[in-house]
Image (cartoon, rainbow, N blue to C red; front, side):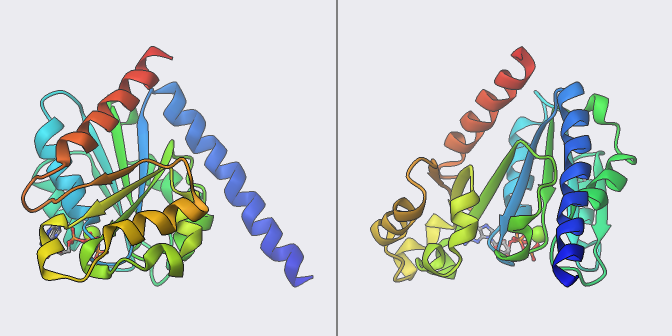
Length: 219
Ligand SMILES: Nc1nc2c(ncn2[C@@H]2O[C@H](COP(=O)(O)OP(=O)(O)OP(=O)(O)O)[C@@H](O)[C@H]2O)c(=O)[nH]1
Ligand SMILES: [Mg+2]
């Protein structure tokens, strides 16, 4: 009986995610679900991206947090398209939370939509939100063992971004180890190294986004 309830929840999420996906498709929105541990740099990455792309694209953000509007307030300073979801303790966003947030966004006007998921590398992984891609953000300060300890996130990632590379010199992070461990479980996934602080590598991330927007617009 209990198993049946869990299956129903996941089935309901799948159906809601499909509706979100159709809305994104209809409006030609590139939607990126950003997953990371707390503090890896999700908000920083979104801010640095908007700063660099806002002349060319309308960028929206759905900001997921357990409580507070702290990140959303920062984002509101650089884009008018921000909606906060407070999950009230739930450790991940689900598709119906995103559907409700979408009602408050002018999706027809948005080219790129970031969904900043609740900070953790476990629960958000299993919940499809209707996004085009799951981006797993890891950072040098967390250590190089995250693909070993949280493999599901790295298996499900469509793109892995390693942030805070400005901290390489101050840490024992072994990039080869990090990459080898990812390759054991995900052979194909691109990895982009960046620093939101220094700006190093951000161009590679922007190129990836711009290519994906072009694909969506030309479909
Ligand atoms: N050194 C360094 N610090 C960074 C970099 N990117 C972000 N930070 C810092 O890391 C801290 C956390 O960054 P956030 O962007 O708030 O991280 P987050 O993943 O959104 O955090 P939560 O929303 O709490 O999960 C902040 O103090 C940032 O200034 C980076 O590339 N290098
Ligand atoms: Mg944040």
